[in-house]
Structures are given as structure tokens and as C-alpha cells.
Image (cartoon, rainbow, N blue to C red; front, side, top):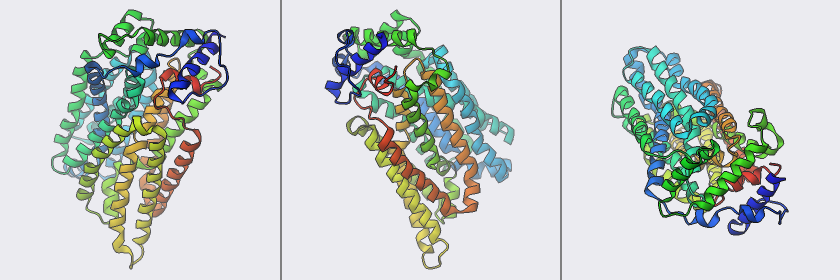
Amino acid sequence: MGRESMEEGLLTNEAEPTSNGAGGGGGGGDSTGNLSMPSSSIAGSSLTPVLVFSTFVAVCGSFCYGCSIGYSSPAETGIMEDLGLSMAAYSVFGSIMTIGGMVGAILSGRIADLIGRRCTMWFSEIFCSAGWLSIAFAKSALWLDIGRLSIGFGVGMICYVVPVYIAEITPKNHRGSFVSANQLMTTSGFALVYFIGTFISWRALAMISAVPSVVQIIGLFFIPESPRWLAKCGREKEFEAALKRLRGEDADISEEAADIIDYIETLEQQTEASFLELFHRRYSNALIVGVGLMLLQQLGGNGPMAYYATNIFEAAGVSSTIGLQISAIIQIPVAIGGLLLMDRSGRRPLLLVSASGMCFSCFIIGISFCFKESPHLKALTPVLALTGSLVAATAFTIGLGGIPWIIMSEIFPINVKAQAGSLVTLVNWSTSWITTYTFNFMMEWSSAGTFFFFSGVGGLTVLFVAKLVPETKGRTLEEIQASLAPFL
């Protein structure tokens, strides 16, 4: 009864100011008045220097992730020539990061729960820094693969802990924009290595890619731990001090602090935080949304299109240097636009536009490869392939690239966030491995058919978002989680 009353209070008090209340009936439980969510105090929270700096330090990890995604394409020619690697050996180097990512994903939630969000970021960047140095000074394929595997393990944890940390420290009215800075920095890292990788050596590129890891390792000593994690651990004094730092010394945090603690205490008293608990009916909606978005994000083909962009451009008769540079230039402005729109238009509209764009652009690329077989239309192949690739990069960046991670950080209650985060991150990385590993085989089977498949996944994503994905803009984490878990 205590938990039901609390959820009624969450939904009833948030429904009026946000118009997003998910709930049903229950208008007047006895505890409703005692558990009003801090809509006024949170909404009025200012953007403090500590909050901005903490977010910047966190997304340095996202920048490292972007560098790791984009590194293999511009470095391909140089590495193969300098170390005498075969295409098969380089394919191992390109894809082995996803193996490390799967291991990191499995451990990410549990590690973040045990040692905290901040220490987990520090731990992950140790592996990333060591990995980049291993690649930069590699004398053989073995050290390349060890470095890439280490980076994969690090960024596998980063993909989970960075959006979770930002979501847990940010007021609800700024959460979308701040968490989408995760995608902005991922895109920036990706674009940086894509662009400068065409001018400098692969060893220098690896050293540059290590810089954000070092910056984050240093910066983590100066930012607060997640207040919600501290509250979950029962460290109330540290929780209040961290929340005070983030909201400003003059801010009144009493209402927000009390509601966070009450919510967490109720969850922990009446829920077994085991992995099997995650598959209880009460979490089914959140699990379907989280896993579904991660599956569709990777099955849509952006991963192999990024890893093997050079091969795709060359197969279509486009200069790989020009293609990579143009892709790098357009993605950062698009990511900035997505960040600005996140808390204005909401998550769902951006996801729908993004999925529709991926569907259309992959169809255009598929058509371009069909034209390649026709003597009369062959000349259109490079133009259509380049246009489709740029539209795909734009569409993915504005929505599907970052929003699934934002929603993942919002929809799972803190008592199962570790298990759920590990699961959905594992799904993301394992699906990424499948698509990157099979991509070359699919291209040998049919270049056009490969992109028509990706286009079909884009269409399926549109339907999935329209039918199942909730809008989370302007709602507290507690309200979102209560609306998705009506039996909590």
C-alpha cells in the first residue's frame, strides 16, 4: 500500500503542470499530499557552474567513445601499409572493440552501483587511455588488438554510466539538453578523427584520441558524485552536500531531497534488486522500450556505415577522403541542433524524424547500388550514394544516435538500473558486433539488398517509436519510472 500511494502521489502531482501524467485513477490516496514531487523547486533550478562543469567532465568520456568509433576508417590504409596487415587482420582490429564493449556492458551497471558513477568513469578511462597508448606505439597486430579491446571495455562502461550520471544530476527541465550533450560530444569525437585522420598519421591520431580520456581522469577529482546514488547508499549528508553543490548554495533543495530519499526508500523496502526481478511484469514496459530502441539503433546500420565508410564510398565510386571530410563537417552542427531541440520538441518527435531519415537515406543508397549495374544510370551512383550517406549521418545524429541512451537513463528505477543498464548496453554492443561482423558478407551478397534491409529497419523503428516509446520531456525521473511501472 505504501508504494501504491507513493506512485499515486507522483502521478497526481506531476500530471497538472506537465500534462504528461501517465496514470490512472487514483486521485486521492492518503499519502498523496505528503509526496508531492518538487516541480517548482526543480523547474526553477538555475544552471550552476558546478552542474555545467560536471556535465563537461562526464561527456569527455563520450568524446573518447566518438573517437573510438571513427578511428578505424581513416586509419585503415596507414595501419595496413605500416604493419603489413591483411584485410582479414584489419577486420579483426576494427571489430574487436565490440567484444570489449560487450564485456564492459555486462559489468557496467554492477560496477556503477558498487563504486559510484564518478569512480566508474574514472575506472573506464584508465582502460581507454591504456588502449590508445597501446595502439599509438604498436609494433604488431597483437598490440593493436589489445589496445582496441581495452578501449572497447572502457567505452562499454562509458556508454552506460555517462548518460545515467548526467540524468541523475540535472533538473528535469534541462535534463534532455544536458544528456544530449553526450551525443554531441560523441559526434564531435567521431567527426574530429574522421576529418584530421585524412591529414595525419594513425599513430598521431591515436595520441590525440587519448587526450579526452586524460582530461576526464583529471576532471573527475573536482566534480560531485551522483546525489541519487549517494541517497541509494544511505549517505544522506554527502547526498545533500552534492545536491547543494549542483543546485547552488542559495537554492532550496529540501523538497527535492526529501522526495528522492522517500522514493528510493520505498523501492528498496519492497523490491528485490536481483537480475530476475528485472523481468517482473512491473518493469516490462520499460524493458521493451529500452531493449527495443537499442536493437533498432544498431540494426539500422549506422555502426557498419561508420566503421566501413571508406569501403562504402570506394564501392560507390566516391573519393573516400572527400566523403569522410564532408561527413565530419556536417555532423557537429546537426548534433548542436539536436541538443537545442531536445527539451523543446521532445524525444519522440526527434526519434520519428531520425528513423524516417534513416529509412529514406538507406533506401537511396540501395537505389544507387542498383543503378551501378545499369550502363545508363551508373553515373548517378556516386551522387546518390554520397547524398544518402550524408542524409543518414544527419538523421542518425539528430535522434537515434543519442536519444535511446537518454531514454535508457530515464526509464529504469534506481533499484534495477544497474541490471537494466547492463542488459540494454549489452544488447547494444552485441548487436553492433553482429552488424559490423556481417556487413562485409552482406555487401558481397548484395550491396543494394544490404541497404534495403537497413531501410526496412528504419521503417520498423518509426512504428516502434510511434506505438511504444513514451515522451519523457519535462518530467522527473521518478514520475517517468512510475508511469512505466504501474504495478510498482
